[in-house]
Figure (cartoon, rainbow, N blue to C red):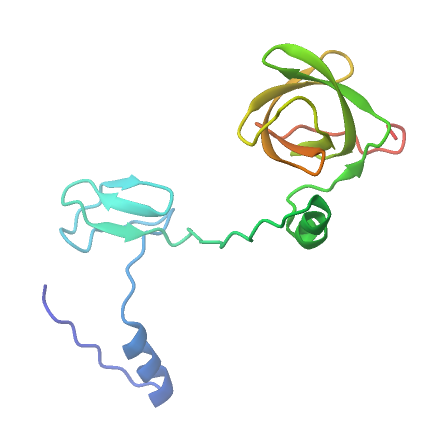
Length: 173
């Protein structure tokens, strides 16, 4: 690999910061990208990196990001207080509403606490453990596949496999 010298006229602090940071090669979507190893432009694109189809050089995607997961709290109330601002979908209270939960095909009543486009929270039924696959039967017989995300303190949280569309109009409430 040849050394590359960069001469520039810039403020000394900017040049020092550039020298510490170095040159970062990234794959940019919707642009012509040439491999820094061989110069060709055939890529295998992954979630966080792109790999040259000819020489195997890997470079990170410019659009990829990394997020640190927050630790899980021991109680459902502590979780809802700390994670409420991180939720992807707005929760709607559903107290008093009962649906059916199909666990291994067997229907069981499921008392809801809240619902969103991404999932539901309700009273614990059977021996559900995180990762278990179930179906939620809504009024009208619509079956929605879901996965148990957590179960503690007599409650269970289910995440729908694909988000659903909720009617949030005043007439529906």
